Image (cartoon, rainbow, N blue to C red; front, top):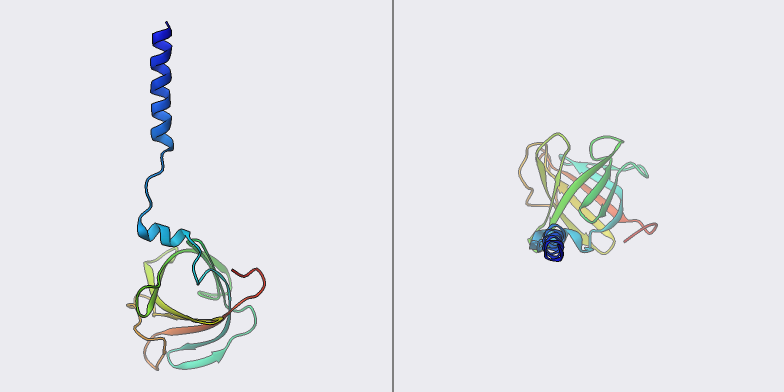
Length: 153
């Protein structure tokens, strides 16, 4: 009877060890888990769409980056959207990819200079931008946002 209990206990420990062992993170997964320069709350100041500039109202556009989640207000209307995102700050320009709930991944670019975040987003279905400038007919929307000091990084 003791041998049977010992065998059951060994098997149970082995099963639990396998069930709770953590798989190693890929480099991309690790990037999304550690805090980065983009983490925090960013409030829209201005935008340029297809070469036409406009000042944004306070709270009209807000991006909050935390971990691998981006909360966006004003990206597709006034409602807040929760999106998954990844960044690649090692490229030039830096890359920001995020998934829309009912569509393909959006391939954007970004730059951070001090407390100013600039994000260039292509028109729906467009390829990744190569510039942070939205010229007339480019289909690009470029947001300039400042880091919020409340609830920041």
